[in-house]
Length: 329
Ligand SMILES: [Zn+2]
Image (cartoon, rainbow, N blue to C red; front, side, top):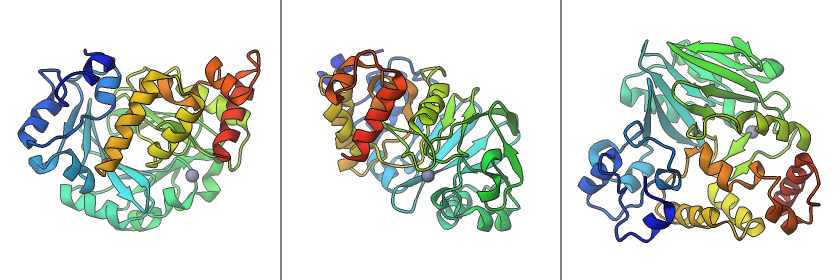
């Protein structure tokens, strides 16, 4: 694997891994495209395992604009369906039994269009929390496909059409794939995060964002830090499919309080470039978040110094200071 430094100084912008599907795809696409950030900011990801498909070989930029990006994971594909102004709905298809699930449908129409294009129907709707930009399409999709709606037990009264309610430590079968559930309150009091160990895929809703975390609408810093602390021990090459394209504004804040973090600076540079081309910055890898997301690094002494947090303060105190600074940024 190539280091970020070596890659940044290389003369071309394609993935240098010779077996990489992305490199071949981009090469044939004949454009000046940059690789997804996570492709080289981490050396933990297997290039042969993860494939990025651009339908019709139209190139990354066109694919992002046309909402066609699919991430192929072991026994599961994940398609990003942009909805509303900055939401990402995730369309999951598992290969074992051919089941399809929709994570956090803000609205029904773009999801139905994406399903139609692939000849799929929604067997399940998976909700992380009750906010309408995550559940707005529930009832229409349920009516259209007879989909079963799965959501948080702690908030079952606020999830439209819920059929199956799950709580911390529960497992649920998506076709042949196991899904594990973490209660992750803080953004809302009944938020859950969904984890597919075999596919190494995490759906944290509005708990964890690329370079950020959710606002504390119904919870405390202690609750949110406890929630995030359930996710940080997962394998570092877990893909994080968060629910919003907030990465560029999160990056502005992150560099303001962690200005000497070289990995963060490089990540921000690439995010700015990706966004200038209209490309999505999600998913990211957990390893990237651990290295550069300030909300996962409240113990970091440079961040504490920037925010006036005592070196011997607790992680909850550090986290609270970061959240407060972001709210006022
Ligand atoms: Zn929300």
